Image 1 (spheres, rainbow, N blue to C red):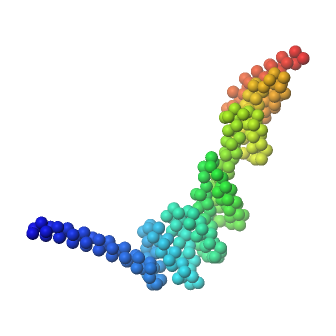
Image 2: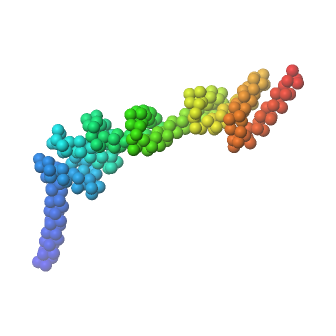
Image 3: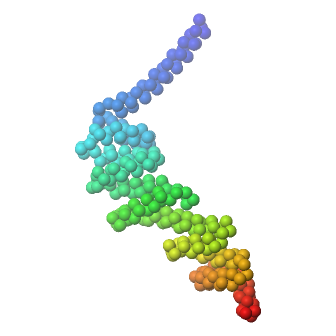
Length: 274
């Protein structure tokens, strides 16, 4: 009997705990599913302030139709996107914010919404080794923002994001061309590296590109048949002077100078031998 009493007490305690949990859950669900807009509005901000962003986003989404056309409309729509942003769902947040910006261009939240949307796009980009289409899209949108909002408080932050994304694209261009050098296809490497600077002379990896351009020319020449070496050595000499003239203090000069001297001796010998 005593055993049964203990067992009964345990069951009752578990049941009470489950009832309490069910009651708490039901309170949220009842308000969420109900039509009391003010209760739902209050709960949405309470959840947001408590950093329960997933539930806050769900509640603001539920409010979005009920508050359409009211004074609360833009606030609900903005905080729906902001909740998803804070939760880390940047894809959904970007979509929310894009719709908000289009619907409420004059809202006091619009400038912040524009910046947060750009940040969502920025966070949706990938490492330089991967597909850069999201990077191009983000940069395009950021450029529009900078032009249309020159006095924005977010101007410097957007500029910093753009600089980082441009660096990523320049690094990808450089590394994609360098890959031919790594594969020991020196003719393809020379062409690809020169083409990188042809397309973007201000590439921030210019010094490295000029170095590998010269090294590609040298290795291509030295591995060529003797009858082709002279003209290919001259290409190396030209590439050597390109980097020396632009970067006289380059760390690569120490490696390139002995190769240049070696080539000059070979060219002199060839001249003497007619």
